[in-house]
Image (cartoon, rainbow, N blue to C red):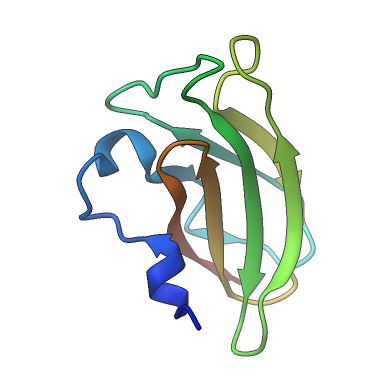
Length: 118
């Protein structure tokens, strides 16, 4: 049986500069108020976007002590959709925001940020 770490590539793995999802979100928000989050795959080094090598999806989860809660899934198609999404969300309490992305050649990659709710 595969362990969680065997399935998701760590940021330090080769190719991380174009695979690790970069999360742009405020570090502090007000409880219940909407805020924007942008996730970019390949922020510093653009990821290929061809039929043969592309980002298929980006998923977002939030966790605050308990199990992670699904926030959103973005299904992307090669050549037309760039691996960048912006969406609006809200939190009631402080949480870690986790972004996962799937490269059809190199598998699943993850990153996270902490967001404090005032």
